[in-house]
Length: 102
Image (cartoon, rainbow, N blue to C red; front, side, top):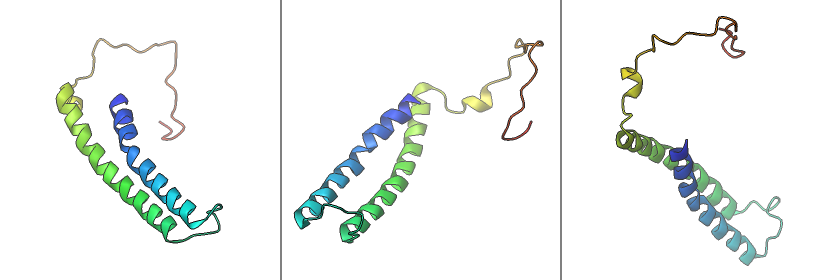
């Protein structure tokens, strides 16, 4: 969680700077209300955000693998065995999932 949050926060600098540049362009053109004025800067910003999201997804997949190697958790799920000493609470029934109904 913390690795993702730090990576995401670091990556948010790009759309923030891009948004500031677009706002400066709007201010230089004299636009105050940009809701009704859909010009080329708006479309450039929209395409830029979509591109940023795709690039971020790819970079996070790479960063996730780097963090897994650094922390020694690469392949952890396949190596981890169920704990035989775990005993459920017999007084408490198993709750059904509202999503899968299991």
